[in-house]
Amino acid sequence: MDLVFYHRYLKCYVLIDLKITALHHQDIGQMNMYLGYFANEENVEGDNPPIGIILTKDKDELMVEYAMYGMSSQLLVAKYQLYLPNADDLRKWILEVDE
Image (cartoon, rainbow, N blue to C red):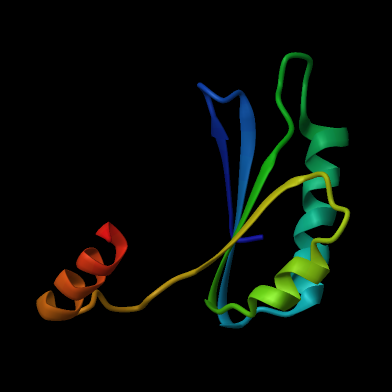
């Protein structure tokens, strides 16, 4: 785990794992273990369950779906980009999303 925050308004820990390589199913299991630890050992009365965020270079949607099968924890997986797209690509993407 790379970053741990406590969100005052949500009243929960936010755990962030940054992956510079492709995501593996073990990464999801490891984050789930961290979520379990924080829920059982760090949370105090009134805290909500922790949230886990994995930011990864590459994400296989099907692998994520199967690796998270049956998990009740709040775990999110997202792909990041190292650079912003150029202006033309960004306009094109916005128009596609807007349709």
